[in-house]
Structure formats: structure tokens, C-alpha cells
Length: 466
Image (cartoon, rainbow, N blue to C red; front, side):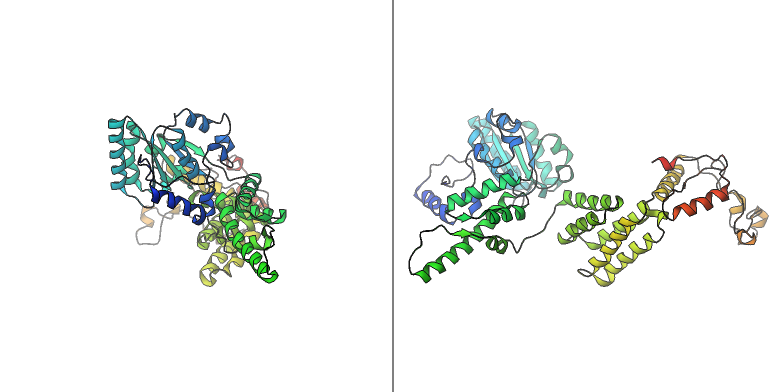
């Protein structure tokens, strides 16, 4: 597959001898991912929900009716490739920029060029911005007028959730197209295509290992294959040298070649996946699954997540989701958080793992959290009642003359250790915020609490239903 001679995007300059020579060199020297880049929509692997026959994005492209769009999805899913293929299906100029390399001045210059092209040639412009999430608010705002006026059709590519990464005005003027991670079948098809083009062979185990390690990323498949091919080629040359003649057999890539090519595998996640992974951890522990909890925590820490953030979330969970069903849970989570500061990674992973397992296996109760949220709601939404006189500070001279502390009964003077008294302000007397569950240690606490309050007809906040 020979790439077209390189030229400035949108330029009508005919290729010269140097362009042709550069194209010839690229067929040999360019990375495998570049050499195998599709030249037609039908050659794109994956994204059939967008690009298959009759799919919505394909229909818009073929009718040349594509409006401003955001392509978002994991790395290596074809966002940039598809955007570049639009140039072959449109009469518009195609301009490509990377948000890493340009600023507001560059954006405004491109918009001015697009406006001139529209007036002088009657040609619209597609402005492709790779990694658009790296644009700050001022840079994104600089695009708005050009998009609103139709001077450019903006196509932004991002690995981040656009609802987190893009300004609302720009997002509202764009159609969102989600690119999915490639399936195992997609990756296998891509690998086999690369092997055919490059003249290599690979066993089914090697291809399966490659697909497993790629995690839905087409670029990872091709870059891994490129290194594995070098390893296999070197081994084949060594054998040929020993035999003293060429064997004529295709170099074969082994599972060891694949694993050797991927041993520097980088774990990473963006802003959206950061929230998804921590959500998976919390929901797994809340759901009492220690295995899933350990897995998601390992994903977070291996990707470089701050262990103190993970520890803080576990401390919160200990009170929100375990609560009084296991009163020791908060102490264990807090101790793990302290261990992170005292020991540090990688060893503190053991302390966090212990906390995850304990919290997952602990009986669950959210009644403390519900009680707290209900009390907060009353403070924020109801009239603020005065502190009852008997509860007011009586430690200073003259307090008694004001009636402060008068009538207060000291619970420790009662043989039972408590007294029946009114502790809430007027208007809230009888309100119940904490309704114990029947889970774990909270069951015994519930019996004691109900016995003390006599379960008289008090006003309940209905916390237990949430």
C-alpha cells in the first residue's frame, strides 16, 4: 500500500521529484502503523456502528454533509485515521492541527485562511484538531465564531470524555461520535493484514497473545508487531548465517517475540477512566466482592494513581457503606491511609489491599450516612431552632442567672448511664435521623437504641428506605 506523496494539507501544488522520493522512502522507513493506514473507508478495521454500510457517520461523509463533530474514544481506535479519510470524500479543504503544538494565534490564522478560501474559491474547510482536550478555555473559545458561522467544520479527536474536557458552548455545536475499543476479531484481522503485507508468519498462539496485550488498541497491535518482526527477522538471519544460505521460509513470529516486544507495556488512563475505575472499586467493595475490589485497585495503582486518593476513598466508604455494621472498619481504613504516608508504594499496596478485603467482607450499613444527610437537610431547609436552655453553656459566671444549664440532668449520675431528656431544638423534637439496620454489630446497637427511646411515636426521616 503506497502512501500518496506528502504535501501541505489543503494545498493544490502538484508533487515534485522530491515529494515522490520522500514517498518512496516512507514506504520503507515509516512506522508500520503509518504504512498500513487505510486509504478508503472500507479499509478501516472496526467502528462498524459508525462506518459500516448505512451507518450514520458514513452516510453523512458520503453525502458531504458532515457538521462539526467530536470523535472520542480510547487510543488506537481510528479517530485520526477516519478524520483524514474525510478529505477523500469531500470538496472542502482539509487542514490538520495538533492541539499539543498550536495556540490561539494559530487557530485564528487558520480561521482567517478558511474565510478567505470560502470567499475566493467558494470552498469550505474541515479543520481537524487532534487531542482537542488539550486546548484550554481561551483556545476553545477562539474556535466558536468560526464554527458558529460555518467558516469551518471542526472535527476534534480526544481520548477524554468530552463532557469533562470541552467547553459547553463548543460541545453544544458539535455532534458526538463515540469510537469503541476494537474487538478481538478486529485486532486479529489487522494483525493478519500486517503479516501479509510485511511477509511474516505467526502462529495462532502468538496472534492471540498479541490481541490480549493490545486491549482494543490498533496502534498497539502494529507497534508491537513491528518490534516482534525485528526480533523474528534477526533470529531468521542468524539461522541463515549458520546454514550458509537463505532458507526461503517466511520469518515466524513467536509468542516470546510478542511478549518481548510488549514488556515495556505502559498502563495509563485518562480523566474519564480515572472516575470509572474508582467507581468500579467503590461499587465492588460496597457489593462485598473482595476479588473485584483488589483487581480495580491494582488497575488504579499500576496506572500511577495517587495511593493517597485511593486511601481517602476507602476511608469515606468505611463510614458511608459499612458504618456501624462493623465499627472497626473506619479504624482499619484510616490505618491503611496512614500506612500509605508512612510506608509508601509499593509495599503500602499490601495495607490498602487488607483494607479493601476487610471492607468488602464486612457487613454493610449506610444508616450513619443517611442519618447525617438527613440532619444536614434539616439544618439547610428548616428553621434553625434555638439551643434548649438546659443544653446551653453554663460554665461562666452569670450563666445560671440567664437560665443556661438549668434543668440539665447528668447522665453519669443515673445508674443506667443515660436519662430521658429532650436534646433537639423546638420544632424538631422527636425527629429521628439515625435508624439502625439489622446488619452485623449494628443489630445489637439497634436493640439498645430502641429500648432507650422506647420506640414511641416519633417523627421519622424514613432514612431506612433509601
